[in-house]
Image (cartoon, rainbow, N blue to C red):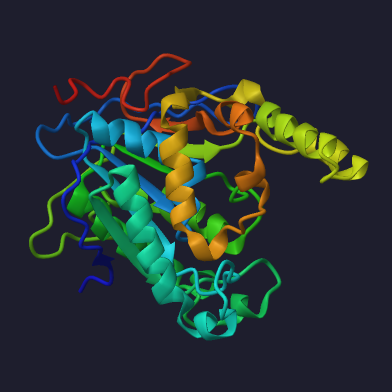
Length: 327
């Protein structure tokens, strides 16, 4: 019995994604396995796993646009409904709050349309809220989910869409949000679980699938510092927080794949604006001068954590090593 639902997004080109594998210095061990690689023809591509509606935009929006335009099958899986989010840009937030999950689902559909993503599924959990919030203990929250059940749901999706490449977050979830941490845990386990027929026997209609590459989507420290310095220069960040920024993010030396998505910046901003309830008009992103945006969101960076194909140490394409791509 499957527990996920696919959004009915129509009229946008499909994509195939791939996941860079391998590793780099700075604490991530090299894990490259090539003994049982199966190179698949036909439907495949990129599956990007995210925690909430809107998370798909900033860290992977350019990749989604780029690979969709290239003819790859691109899939976004969203773990939760975003029900714990704040409500902005509505004159009646108290009326919107009880139906925020429905509102955010509609916003997500618009965002994915802008990004050109044809395939989407919710994993089926409630937003857990920030660490320490009451929502952490909600029985339907992702933070309270039975781990193996959640992994099983994700395995079903991987077998359904058969991606070559997957992206999840790092072990800290980027910034410590419970749902982001669980995306890392569940997504990583499902990457390997999809081919584990002992723990996850094939259901009727399923086929064996073994994704090729797993990436963590991360923010490099240099970009975190650059953004913090911009905020500090505008009087919107304290000197103490600026100093903290120099220790945040992922050390640049650990980045194994960097995508140049500067030409996608306008599309990413349009997709972000689709999440109307979550992005205040005066937010830092909306007020960032246009000339700074390419530097801030025009590059998307990943750590290649595991690969079943041989790849160079540094990459500029998530599908490196995955064979011939769509024409």
